[in-house]
Length: 137
Image 1 (cartoon, rainbow, N blue to C red):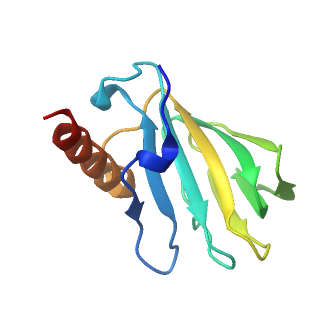
Image 2 (cartoon, rainbow, N blue to C red; image 1 turned 90 degrees about the vertical axis):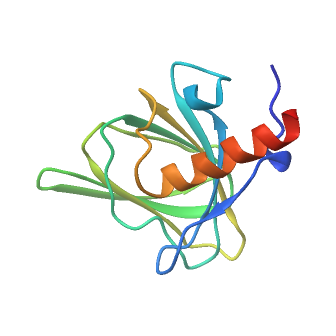
């Protein structure tokens, strides 16, 4: 299977942490059952905001410059990341990725196990399912 991210539906999260989410792989799309994979783009100056998941997250930086912050207990680690960087965030750890460059920050985010359908991801998944239904008819 090959998925072209340029053809996927896009969901834009609201301010103050605007970013674009495209669901690449997910069990509810029927194209992969072991993980959720998102393509995330963040405009200069924006960020994901500090958040956490019940899944492990592996973030691969495809383009741009960012600042990755991970909070584990009392330990806060902030590291500049760029093209080719891989960030591993354990389930339950609070984390944020901020675009500190002047170009779009492009990320592949892999969640193991797959994400639940809540929040912004749920909205992005709904858009992806609707698009897949309309293109398969």
